[in-house]
Length: 119
Image 1 (cartoon, rainbow, N blue to C red):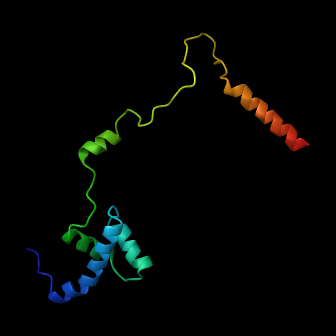
Image 2 (image 1 turned 60 degrees about the vertical axis):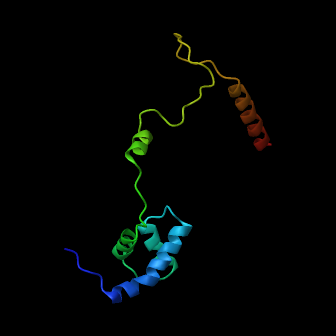
Image 3 (image 1 turned 90 degrees about the horizontal axis):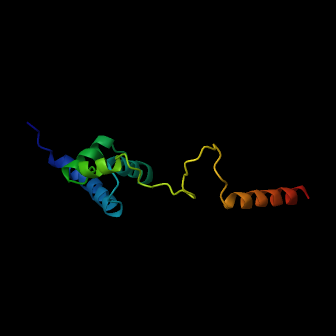
């Protein structure tokens, strides 16, 4: 059985809860730890993390966790960004791939910059 919160504690929590609600309107994805850090380090309040957590929990201000569907999509085996190859991989007996068009250009730019820096 849970004890009832006294009226003195409710009055003491009222300005803190008002500030937490303001912060949550500005930053809806902040959790209780970031809200607590802002209250302590920016607003210079002396307040416990548990108190911030309980106030946010009682007033339904905590960030909702991701659904199971989103978590399974994010951790699937298929990469989110697929690599793009400059040239198709050909089955050949040689170990060395043919250079792309960019490689001679890069080498010539590097040679030019080396000669300019030595002058």
